[in-house]
Length: 165
Length: 362
Image 1: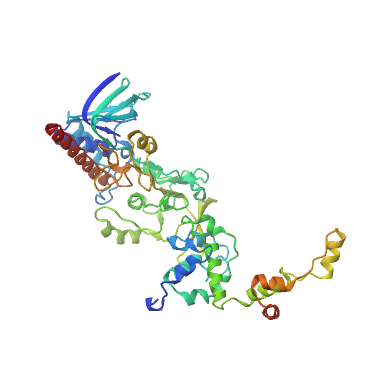
Image 2: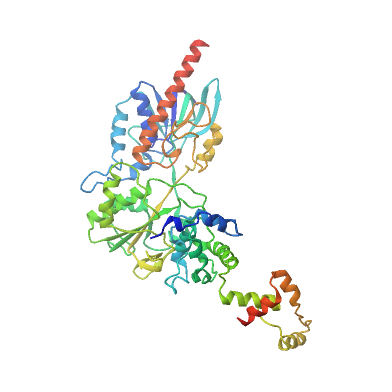
């Protein structure tokens, strides 16, 4: 049972205002996305149609705090079959951005953000990589941590903390 | 080159066009109806009676009544193999040039084939040019033309009309699936509208299947059931017992070992797939193929969905003295088309009356 008192009618507009989120309001709940979702085939709680319905109903906390929204593999199958051009993969990115702002990003996402802020990429560049590059006649890669952190808006300490998490 | 003068010219000899001609004739207004094909009756000729224990009011039988009445109304003149090619308005009169179409030997007892290029001078024109069924090949994921056992709802209709039901392997199928909204309510195709008739059409056919082949399981994939027409709501609870209603649009139809394999989301949101002996795609109604040419010829607007005319409730178009009847204006069923044609005939008569009054005062 869902009480409308617990719903935030502005939530869908918040999602629609995020980049890529505008398509959500066109959903007819036809479930073509759920039919084609490879993740749904592995995790029975995962259902794109359900995530869209909860968002349209305004179940803000339930959606943003859900670990399920981070399971999307971004294969775009849902987007391909959607007759209403909801672009669910992009809608979900919008929802994940809102979730991250609300502090619901999972540890793995924080860790990835930390790696990015610390190294400018998802891997630290070590002597091994630079030796290989030298063999191929490529210049060595220098890490400029302060620049990355400034671009991403994450303080280096937070990035370090993220790396440890 | 022949010249005919008539108060009203009707383009299209389907139920809407014939109904409009009859409505005028009943009130003593003569008309000329031009049908581009060899026969009157349009697409309704291919529809069969959907009655099971009782009449379901599909309207398919109304065509016979209309044609029988048409034979007894000399005010309505029917011309077959007559295609409107050009039109211009001069002094309150539309001059429409009809061109004869190749005769393939199929004659209609009521209609006289157009022998030569003919100009019809008419004060009012009713466009009753019908619709085009959506081509399901455009929705490639439903496998039409590629997966054996996938057919259109109209093809299934033609089969049931012959009292036959065969699936992918030429045998009566153990299970039949209907997929709704193929080409309707689909932003990716630009068809945002509901085609209004397909739910009733598919469920009536499902009823025929359950009646004639009670062992055959029927599944109905849909977004929501849109019912139009009488006794709809009383019939639905009974249908829900006989037919498996799945509230999901399939993601894909592919060739399986025992017939077309449909992948869809179950009620729990989990993807699953099931093979059916036959899959019928309920294709939507799209604007008539001639909509572009006619809107240019008569200088009239098309609505946001591409159908002809401006005001459905008044059956009027944007052009003076031009009226739109039936599915040319938007998706509607047989009975609704007949009613809408009467509306168009009424609007055309009003315009004749007004023109007569102006002439008298003028």
